[in-house]
Length: 81
Image 1 (cartoon, rainbow, N blue to C red):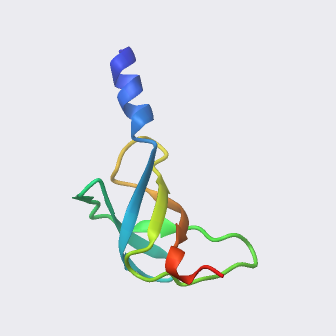
Image 2: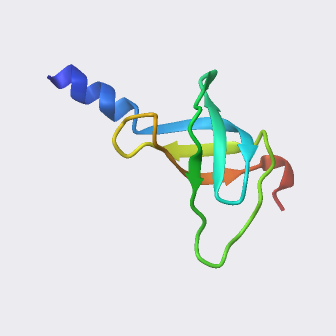
């Protein structure tokens, strides 16, 4: 029981690289595994950007299930001011 809970907790957050980016969704690669589902992008109010493919993505998976995810931050270090 405890090991199942620990495994779910380890799957809650991930860092990956975006492979496709649209206005509202991204597709990302996490630890060389391609996550096929579209991941919803969330942007803070009043801030809008359009990152390029290959940018860093910080993801959360609310239930610990990799079939549904939310991109909290998507940024590209090459274009920082």
